[in-house]
Length: 117
Image (cartoon, rainbow, N blue to C red):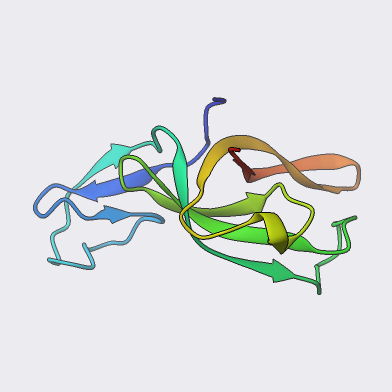
């Protein structure tokens, strides 16, 4: 797995994982956090298909989803699939950090998920 450029934050008091960072824990209001990175495979929590894409995307549509990694980090990214027919909640995903679109021929990187058969 490539290194994911995502930094999550785990509350030092109650252990709740936050991504992105908040000034206070959403659970216990504590202000001290431990920096953590996503680890392991991800499980698909939710997904949708978007047809009205912003400038810079060459695809007709995108399938995006929220994946929960083995250490509790949840993050949203593109799902590499041709249709929703091959996607279902709870499936296992591999995560990678790669170009999601190009602006003036320069790559913009983001999280992509690949379903594991």
